[in-house]
Length: 260
Length: 367
Image 1 (cartoon, rainbow over the protein chains, first blue to last red):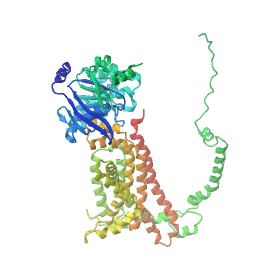
Image 2: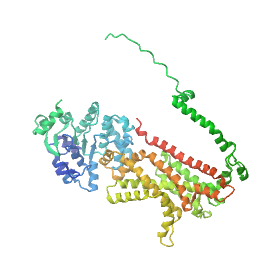
Image 3: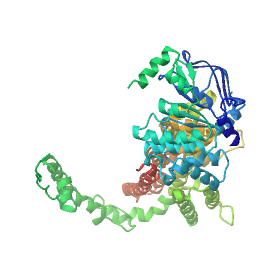
Image 4: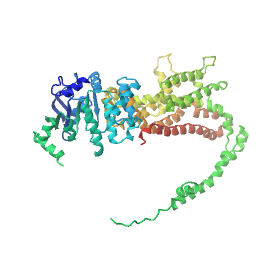
């Protein structure tokens, strides 16, 4: 924890990067080249926002980090472990990486509490009582403790997404991945989820977030990455990125999403 | 904004919707077509009902007397055939003085089945109960222990055999079906191909030929001196057959689970088997309960086909009881009605159970 805090305070001198993409290429099928020569180093405690048009490969990029997608060329190293076909390595990395999905993907047949204790009990081999204690701590953190015994479908979208964040946090991950966490939400529910994410960012955890919430990017990101057609077109700190975009493609994209 | 308050007319009081008369009016006489159907159906019932009630009850012979039954032929049913032959129909060729053994054993089996149907008892110890219970069941049926006379399996018959064959093949076929269904979706080509071949091969032949092969052809390929009991061979045959059909039902359920569920489980670090057991199967099986129970009911009735290999379960035992007895042979239809009622009780219970358990596992979907 202290290590993470220090990293958060000195994002410019993070030491070893926690995630490294080295010339990563990925194809879907034989001809759709979804990631092209991705090089990316993420420092400990860094908070990165990834944006870009749909189909640009931004979701695929972060899904490669916990091996929901396989890459075909290049190397991805997460916290000192390279992602290969080695199941042990994948298991180790998945314990350190939490993920939040656009469609929440809560388990509808389990209560909120059971959703949260599942992984600590079965992956972390934690006794039920400890797992429940930890789950309640995380539920309080996302301000939804009173819903612990309900089923996911009995909650609103915003509540479900906060439960999903709490569930990912129950493994005490070093890295959190957010894949368009607010895109499936009603406008009035977006804020409650973003508030939780901002609070999380203050805690110093490494965050990669695919989102078009530019206010969120300005508020928490150390770096904004713009992707198009499988490539990282531009990366910069949020202030420069929004006020002084370098490439025309970025300017065009920003004018579309900020235009009204 | 100075609109004057204008009260709208009060709505009429609701029409009484409960009770017999409103029910009849709503369901039977709502328009002229329904009224006509009701009248026609009513006329048919009034025309036929006395004949049926007469035959079934009023003119029926209940005492086991062949002469009385002969006299009442065509007028009243002969339930005397059941009174006379029920031991043979229910227990088949099991030795007469020993028939308490299948009775106790079957009650034990039914007890375990009922307990296993309740969610409150879905605990690890249930498996141990089954092992012990089945050991007791076979000890009672076969004998040879605690001074019980040995009864070879070809003497088993009637309802105990039906229940035993149906419940054991269901119990073995269900997990088999799950494994085959998972196998058909496996990423390993060898496993996938094996499962596809198994399902297509078994589905491609009728149960009768599977039983026939299990009973008559299988022993030809066994080394001399080594033989497996025909009951076990038939049980394996029914299990493999039912497993193939059920596997396809389960696979349908597996396909209905969104990919996001599996991705979420993976991202939480769950292994393949943990994901299947904790996330995919509970949801998939809940979806296909109607299809699975449909299959269970089918298996229960399909056990009547084992007569082909000289195992006299309930249907076979009825033939056994009546075919060789010229006095009672004419009253086979009453015998069939009797076992029909038995089959119905079991199948209807399964269908009701299916509805109940569906509600139980779907609590999470109610808002």
